[in-house]
Length: 153
Image 1: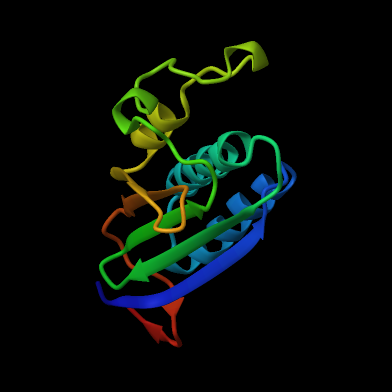
Image 2 (image 1 turned 30 degrees about the vertical axis):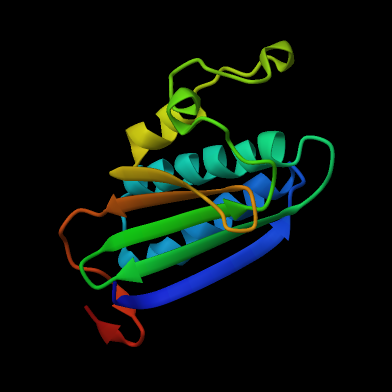
């Protein structure tokens, strides 16, 4: 994929950093002039992906979460949320609505369902260092973008 702009954030898996991640990704995506609904969708999906890392990847410790975002000239936003945590044994089971490994903590088990409903595509894979990579794609409405890289696109 040919990206016109990219960013990478790495932060500790403290729950307070979920808000930072969603805001930073939203701010970065603004350069493509998304609608308010599109920004809300992206923020919600990033929030769910980061929260999954905080709650499930590092249940008894603090680890690193990395968020990568790539923007294309065709107004597509690719997002990867990665951890090096304990991993997910069964991706299909984890994607089932209401499935949770932490029912005693009042978890709804809707994280992947929410991500899939707000993004155009969501894929899961195993990180080579352990843990999970959540890849999400959102195609924005076809309308004129604002300045990107100093030129109108």
